[in-house]
Amino acid sequence: MVMKINPKEVIEKLKSGEQKICVVGLGRIGLPTACLFAKVKASVIGVDKNLKNVKLISEGKTPFQEKGLQPLLEKVIKTGKLQVSSNLKEEIPKSDVIIILVSTLIDNQKNPDYSELEKVCKDIGLTLKKDSLIIFESTVGPGFTENFALKTIEHLSGFKVGKDFGLAYSPIRASPGRILRDLAFYPRIVAGIDKASLNRACAVLSLIVKNRFVILDSIKAAEAAKVFENVYRDVNIALANVLARFCEETGLNYKKIAEAANTQPYCHLLRPGIVGGTCIPVTPYFLLFEAKNLGLSLEVVETARKVNEAVAKRIVDKISEVFKEDGLKLRRSKIFILGASYKADSRGEYLTPCKVLMEILKRKGAEIFVWDPLYTIGELKEIGLSPVRFEDGLRKANCIIISVGHMMFKNLKRKILENLLMRKEKIFVVDASGFNIFTPKDSVDNVKCLSIGYWKT
Image (cartoon, rainbow, N blue to C red; front, side, top):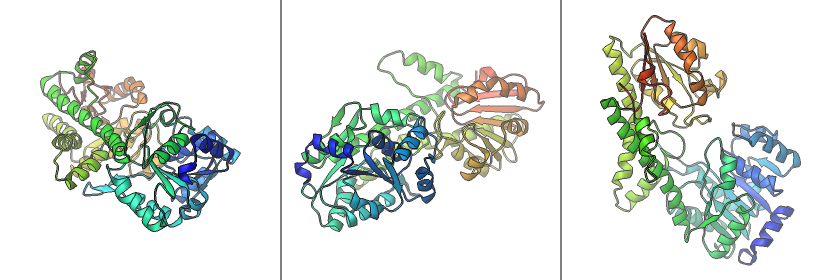
């Protein structure tokens, strides 16, 4: 019985292989999570509907790049501690702990898209065995786990939570490029449907978490904590974007001013820029959706989203203005975008600044080509971009946009300027990354440099 299993027994049974862990969703967080459990000799089955990824993982190959993950995956596949499958219904009855890490996004109306998570809940409900523990880790709006997931699982299984199975929630806290470290060393928020579920979940997670547990008194509170984290970032980036806009119109350098202001210990101004990825530009809509259902208007959250979603258009409009000043037009111009990912020195293509800028520029009639040192030409094609070799991009473009602050771009700064100075025509370099790799002070001869938050001297 779930209620009778003590934490020490949970750990012993998992480490001995007597009980199995099923990780549902082998994406950027799911696969590292599965590997970390397998690393401590737990018996893990990872499930994902992507057949191509399942095949790669079964061969010990990661479907994406993440620091430290490849050698760890090779090891746990070789030892047999991690196995993979695409058949969730087949694996759930064999599992004692089910950890759900399915992506949650938004639809075209910017409402939460829980469709994949809902399918998983139904499959679990149809095949769940007694005494299992289910831990949700996917980011959702406050109330989803109990209002939909739990009701679905109870209805389809005929089981009662707390009596026949346990339920807990522990949100994801990890960033690309440092996921393995973050999963192990960030404090972990945990809540359970009851005390037994909470204690068992903490015991399971203690196998991989080396920091403390932050216990909340309800699953809904834990869901809200994760959403609030991302909303906080979104709102503060919006503030940075608004202040950067002021600096652009007044000849001030936002980055320098922010650095000075941040020497005050209670000031934490962030970098301005286009907000991309699966978290910060998405999660606020989970909260807004729940608030709308309650008849609430969260003005600050709504405004922050509007501000951040308008940044790309503002950058393109400003590029259009400087083009006009030199008698040029965006139509038929050649724009070379440096950076395909949404985070510096990391891969990840969902809602990237590159794609957002590309869509707007294409509507203006510009020709766009992209280069990113973290991707091959073939990979850039696969994600719907028009790739070009670095040297060819420098040779063809009359405008270069830095969309993300890869360290490589900083290292290439001198080479970029030298190549552009060899050309006679006017060329613009626009740093939209917020890292100030190029600023107006770098302008020389036929090369005019501009930067978000520092547009003119």
